[in-house]
Length: 68
Picture 1 (spheres, rainbow, N blue to C red):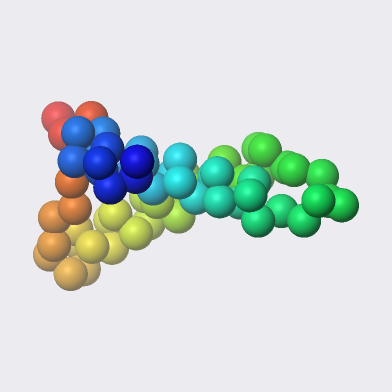
Picture 2 (picture 1 turned 180 degrees about the horizontal axis):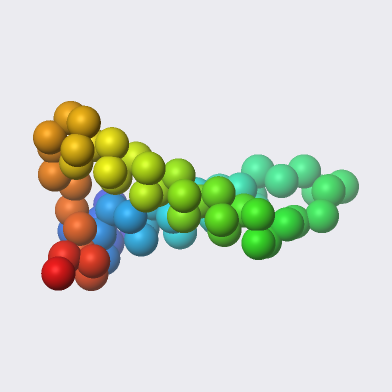
């Protein structure tokens, strides 16, 4: 699903969503799922990776919905 939607939706949105869901899946059963920190970390990480590839490596990742 991630790869199929990567082009139309874009790298930043899909990566943030993917990371958020992975954080939930990887949280041990005996621990409480902390939605707000997980979402914040996912969004910041996705933005940093996108900007790093765009500015430092001069490689364009699919922007999708954020292409304005």
